[in-house]
Structure formats: C-alpha cells, structure tokens
Length: 113
Length: 112
Image (cartoon, rainbow over all chains, first blue to last red; front, side, top):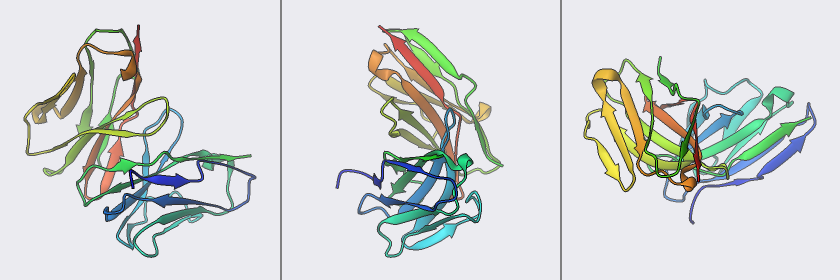
C-alpha cells in the first residue's frame, strides 16, 4: 500500500443521476477526509471520519451529499440528483491521527452534463 | 472563523532565481497547525511541511525553507535556486478543531 487511492478517476454523468465515489486510505491511517476542489481554488473540506465514525457533517454542501466508512477502512461519497454545479474534483485524504499531515489521493473528477 | 490568504495568485520566475510564496492566516485559537502542499500539473496534492503553533523555528529542507512568524500570522515558503520541476500550484493550509482551511493557492511557473 503506497498511498491513498480513489475510484473512479473520472466520472461523467447526466444531471439528476446519482454518483458514488470510493476512497481507500493508507492502511494504518485512522482518519479519512473528503474535500471538493473547483478550478482555481484550494480544496474545500466536506467531512471526515475517525475510524468508522463520521464526526463532522455540517460542511457537506447539501443533503444530497452523504458519506460512509462502514468498517473503518474504505469510504464512499455519494451525490444524489447531481446538478451541474457539482462538477468538480473530489479529493480524499487520510492521516494517522488528528493534527498529522494528510495524504491526498489523485481525486475523482466529476462532470455533470 | 479561520482563514488563509495567499495574496499572490501567480508568480513567474526564471530558473535559478529564488522565490518566496506568502501565506497569511487568521485564527482565534492558540493551538493550530500550518501546512504547505504542492499540486503539480499531474494534479495530486503533495505534502511538504507541517508546523505547529508552538514551534516558531524556521525550517530548511534542501532548497526549501519556511519562515513562521506568529507576530504577523505568516508562514512563508521560499524556494532557493528554483528549477523547472518546481512549477506547480502551492497551497498553504491551517488546521484546528478538525477543520482544515486551504488558501486559494499560488501558481508558480519556473521558466528555463
């Protein structure tokens, strides 16, 4: 295990469809984070997990966004009823513990047509 | 509220020049962490450095150095003798209370 992986790398979907992204963190990392990055901006924090517990949800962009980490290993981010404004890069990161550096995956680029 | 400002949107230098990327942060807390990340054209964010609020020692790593000054709430990043491979977008970030805030980034172009 050499780093954080994300799947798929690219997703094109039609408006109104649901999409799900997967993130596999570095294996010994307890914390997992989701971010969104739009063109010309820094990553925007969405949510995070400590093991399987989702400890912050308020920054999710709307109730169409949800995330899970069922066994404290991989995580999924789902967007329901996608809108064109959801088009962005979705990044996953993991860290050993709070305050430790976060290591980022390559991201999933979502395009909503 | 926490905030990170990277006032330099784009910087262009010629190879071998030194360049400093500015980062100014805002927080009301006394305990926080500061980070720099590099995002090369390939897109994946690469961790460069982490600094906690109680450690104001400057750090040098090869051609990279960081200057942390709490008095001015700044955490600046200097690349000495820049190289074409340093071309990337660089992000400064502030972490506290489970909240990570990134600046908008500075796009550095190093020309041969």
